[in-house]
Length: 96
Image (tube, rainbow, N blue to C red; front, side, top):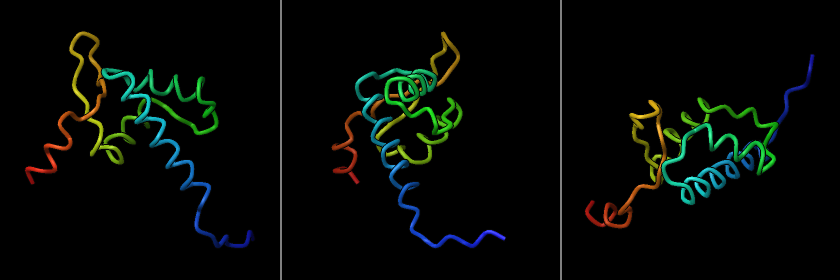
């Protein structure tokens, strides 16, 4: 039987934080991008091939973890979600 590992999961946390930063950075630079283009950028340009990223996982990741800074809308021409920065983020926090 394998002994139970005791730890804080620092590598998992570091991957999570890096993924958050890289996704935000890409979407801020390329508003209106699809999940497929985000995955392509991360897997090929940022060497995150071993993270098991798929467009579906990126879509779930953005909606669960980056909903305060990123939003999505439907691209009716292509029939898919595209992602962008939430505009007037400072104004939203002031009005609450």
